[in-house]
Image (cartoon, rainbow, N blue to C red; front, side):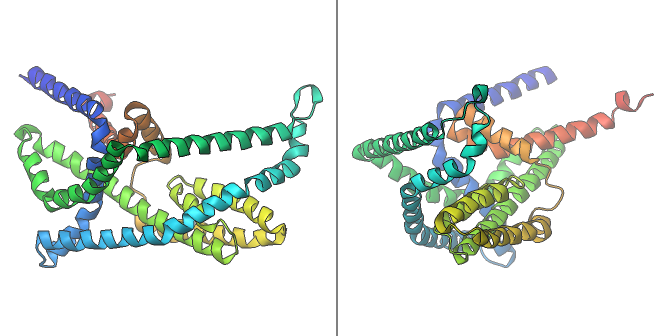
Length: 350
């Protein structure tokens, strides 16, 4: 009996994986909508505890999210496009600065004592950048010239808020239904693992999103006050990769320092760049990480990176979207297995 149940469970798991792989091209809006519903569910639960109906709480949260995202797009997208254009136009200047600054040092790494041809490297980078830009433009033009492709994009964008709304409204009912379908023998164990996974994943995602938002805002505002032309692009990028400790601050500091030197030619201006990232780092370590993330998340940054890359390799963009939930569940199961092993007779017997 146990063996047959195990076979059924394995079969169901294989069927789910195969279905995700088969329907990957249409799952993106559903996964994004489900992710947004998952992130917003605690807010709706809190509104319910304040005597608001579930539907009313969903409407309030949905309206706030829609307004905030719309304002961000209206305010940030034009500036982001402008700064990206500035970056492309100034790329030769950055390459010239890299050549003049690193050329003497790179020369010592040439074969048989010969200097590296930095000018060829510069030309190669410039040519590849142009090719990549031309390829992206061609793909975009073909995509938008096709009525079917354009309609598919529009439908996906419209489906995301619709899916988010209905999943958020029925979230508690779906969780209760899934729990009611579990074998009674395993309800306690599965519920314990699911709650621990929810705690790990929810704390990580919600906390990390807040950390990334705060750090990105600090970097953008600080670099803008320092007079850097590419403040939005660099600050936004540094904030987005800040989920890996020190990677965001190091990459942002390096890129913004080069951009500031090329823009002003004054090494003293680097002081302001270091101050901005120093303030962000201190706030992250002293306030943001302890307050928003805590010490018991259990998702190591290397495990997160591996999960995202593995998900992308196996299932493409859909794999990237489901990588974190799967990583959190696997981490919880591994810790549960470790607890079971340490309490077993095989481990305790001398």
